[in-house]
Length: 295
Image (cartoon, helix red, strand yellow):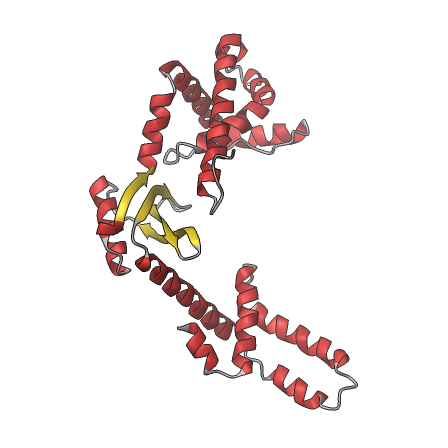
C-alpha cells in the first residue's frame, strides 16, 4: 500500500518519508522536520560549495516538504502501512495464540492489551494487535466482547485461536504458588508502602529523608493491583530501602515489630528472590524469538 504510493511519488516525497521515519523512531516532535531541513540547508551550503550544480541541489533541498503537518501525515501513512502488513501476516497464519492483559493508564482508564503469537514464513512472531480501552464495567464479558470486536474488525477468524492466556491466569498461578504466610508478608509490605505514599506530607518527608542520607533511590515504588508481577519490582525496591524505611518509621513512632524478626525477614527475602525470578522469566517469554530454556 505505502510502497505503491512511494513508487508513484518523486524523490522529494521519498526523502520526506525518510526524515519522517527517523523523527518517529526517535520519538521527536513533528515540528523537528523544519529544524532538520534548516540544518540540511546550512550543511549543504558548505558541503556543495564547489559543485557546479550547487544551485540545483540547494533548490531541491529547499523544496523538501518537512512541515509539521507533512511529517505528521507521513508518519500516519507509515503507521497505517505497518498495521496493514501486520494484519495481513496474521490473517495468513493457520493458528494463533492470544495474550490478554488488563491494566490501567495514567488516567486510571481500564484497557486491554491484546498480543498475538503465530508462525509466519519468517518464523515465530509476537505482535501487539490492539490496545482496547474499556468504559464502564470491566467484567469478563466486557473484555471478551472488546477482544472479539477487535478480531472481527481486523478480519481475523476466532476459529484460528488455540490457547488464550490472561493476566488473571498468571495471578491465579502466583496465588496458588505462594502459601498464605508468604502472602501475608506481601500484604504488610504493601500496607507500609501505602502508609508512606498515601499521605502527601509523609511522602514528601520520606523523599527528603532519602535525599538527606544520600540514598541510591529517591522514592518507593507503588504496587499496581492489576499486574501481579509488578510486586517483584516493588519488593526489590523495598528490600534495598529497608534500612531507611525502618529509620523513617521509628522517627514517626510507627512500630512494625515484624521488620526486626528473623523469620519474617527470611520469608520476605524468599519472596523478593522468587518474584524477581518470575519477572525475569516473564520478560524472556515476552522477548521475540528468544528461547526461555536453553540447553
